[in-house]
Amino acid sequence: MTIKPDSMSVASADDQPPFPTDFTWGAATSSFQIEGASTADGRGPSIWDDFCKREGAIADGTNGDIACDHYHRSGDDVDLLARLGLGAYRFSIAWPRVYPTGSGALNPLGLDHYDRLVDALLAVDIDPYATLYHWDLPQTLEDAGGWRSRETAYAFADYAEAVVDRLGDRVSSWSTLNEPFVSANHGYVTGEHAPGRTSMLEGMAASHHLLLGHGLALERIRSIAPDAEAGIVLNFTPAEPDTDGVADVAETERVNDLENRWYIDPIAGRGYPEATAQLEGWNQNEVEDGDMALIAAPIDVLGVNFYTRQVVSALEGHKPERPTPKTDMGWDIHPHSFGKLLHDLQTGYDFPKYIISENGCAMPDNARMPDGRVDDLDRIDYFRAHLARVLDAIAAGMPIAAYFAWSLMDNFEWAHGYAKRFGIVEVDFDTLERRPKRSALWYADVAATGMLPDPRAT
Image (tube, rainbow, N blue to C red; front, top):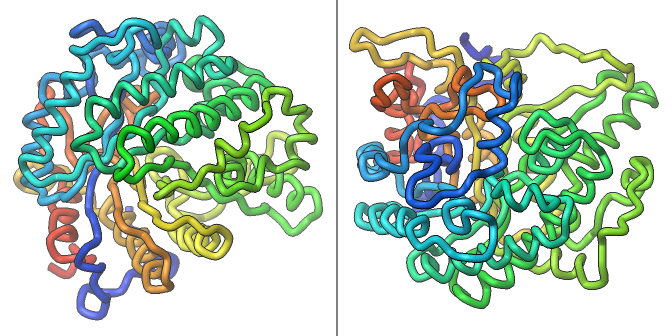
């Protein structure tokens, strides 16, 4: 697929200004999606281990037992990052490796893995960006109520303290949560992700306890590693109305409240979108005195995850379609929405620093170069168009310090299993061999030069 230049034009390498010389280039992954080794060294089961056992939960019937086997191959994967010339690696820590039952007895062997990973990264001058939670809640905690329960937030803070106490002398950038919207909505409202529950009110309770956990963990990070930067990673899927009709506009406002403002507004000290909370019937009984101040404690950095936009209709069962290029996930490729999102964040909020913590696309990856390498020009087009919007935002004064391509390698794509491939590095899931795609080589050039070359011009 070729991205049409009229909607996604990018300046040529000759007339495009370079990124700042101190801009950080990295790639991102998450623990359950790549680590495998599901029972190694005392790891306990997570909600995703349980969810994968449910008939029909995963599209291709697979699981994360082996995944990319990163747990046993992390040294090779660090070497791969170094060969690509990337300066940072964003990874998540598996809570069930550290506390196999979520709390209680600490498992030092689980932390040893991340100790080795951090040391290996630093040895080749790659900065570790650690995320404490990327959806793999210990199953024992879910059995006791999961994120529906306030106690899970306190258990998360204890877990965060143990991790930062072990790694905080070397990790200088921490994120508490990755995409709490997905954890609460997909896990507790729609049921499409673990733990597979389907209740709007449970999802809203989960959303508050996730943010409470963020606030409590932030306190622990500050106390143990006061010089480290700490923040949270939020995903944004900007919504626009299908028509100018009153009903479509109202429904779009509701969707934007739930998906794009529900987490950032409390962190910014504005509380939950009140009208939408009332509309959904949430009485906020879970919110106790002091919670919102804790959640609104200043962060050093906001991670921004962006993949696509959505077009909203108030008509039940009507899914608006636009003649827009799409990824292999069926998501609109719409960098204009990314640019608008960055503008809205810059003008509407006052966070001191931003990173683009995830941005990327699943593509069919059917084309091959003469040497057999995946020839993913479509993925390069996606990156170029979105990075151009990052450059525009920086030029407009937005303090964006880093960009992380999602993902370093093909992996377990949650409910889709292994069928959807986001990686800039191909993984053969029979042999587990890694091979950089054309996009990885292009991205290495971007990291080296700060420019966005057009691969068709070379």
